[in-house]
Length: 208
Image (cartoon, rainbow, N blue to C red; front, side, top):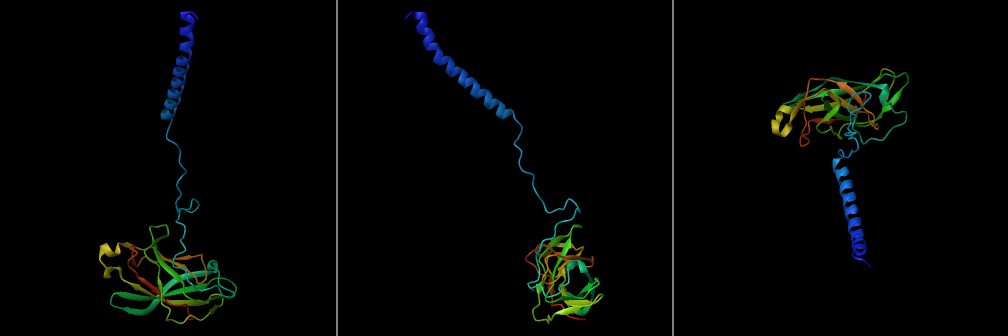
């Protein structure tokens, strides 16, 4: 074999290796020059249709649905005067009114929590249930009501660091046995956003 032929045979593997290295470098260069990889869009609890925070079913009653139970859509809620109160808290009355055209029933404790931020965000802990109160089934005729005592401890009883106070927009209420809520607007109260503080205690629903 001539010297020139031998040199050509030796050069071929070296050329192949050089081409492979160049190709790998080019691929790496393209990858590094590409934009950042796309990640899935993050989700949140804001409804695109309404612009309000999706209700969280916390503080719902442990009561089971009853025959002829009032649908949440058939109820209106309001806050009325209560039994007064003592130092550091007030007592009001949570009122649920049957705005439908047929009778319906409620039995047990409603779930209640403060909401705020202008979008229904729950503020702090939901109401604790006062299980010492009567809770017989209440039959509501059209326009009829069921009432529950609601004790509201004043946020000012706690330090700002313990309470993390925030003005509430009102209350979210879950009728007993329901996972759908209604809103009662009321800006008279300050909530504690800290979950180490409990401001609300609600009794069982009863006939007025």
